[in-house]
Image (tube, rainbow over all chains, first blue to last red; front, side, top):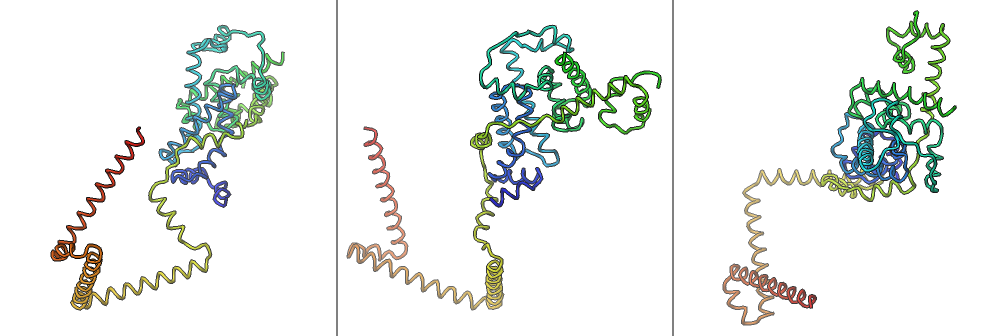
Length: 200
Length: 192
């Protein structure tokens, strides 16, 4: 118990060092610190609670099983978000191959093209779980985020929900800095348009 | 500035950039209602995004993750933990233990230095003690064998230490062969 209380005050690098020594409380502390940010990012990307839980679980298992490869000169959270993003993007790509996208062609270069190639679903029966999900992600801003392309979505969430700098996002997502700035700029623009559409 | 702000310039202000080019942009925003409205709209969006809550996974999430993580304790950590297990918790006891170990270390060092200065005497004493021990051990084993096997042990004892070593080896080999035979029989019996 004493160790658990102490761990809460330690910086990430120190907790990671303890995890490298195989300390179970350090593993638990890392999960406690980042389960919500990682799950939120993934949930807002895939918009399905069960899938998000599975992907978040895969993310933590990958991180914790490879904790000995973590280099303390980098932020642990950046490494964690990088793996979460990769796991999620892989899942979205696999799902895109397996199903018809409702969000428009994956090859659409602009929001207008994506809109033109998207399918509209008039109505569908909601399960209890979907009802909870729609309550969690049901606000106008959440709906607008859901309409963004996945790469815009991860950039805007990391920037404004997680408060990461452009440089950190570029390093986390393995994207050039200019691309990150462009994605965030476009995402803001599309969000404002979507919010105005929803208001009307 | 004669024109309205470009979207990139709105982004600069939104991100709180304080570089060389931002003062004219800020001055323009103060005097232009359209650009001011545009910037305020962008700021409102950012505020909304920044207020989005973190969503919690299900309550058993951490336990499910940890049940699938391989916990590996490196040998040096395990060793250190074992050593720490012997260190007393109370401060006074720790000092007392440290004092005891320091006393033992000093005594051993002094004894080693003394022994090194009188190496011949030490060698003689050690040789003497070892000889006595060997004789005592041989005597004990011979008594035990004579008690167990009677006259049958006489040829073994006549062979001295070498005879005893051969007998011990034979005993070990016989025991191992018997154990192997019993195991084979047990495995076959289980297979039926």
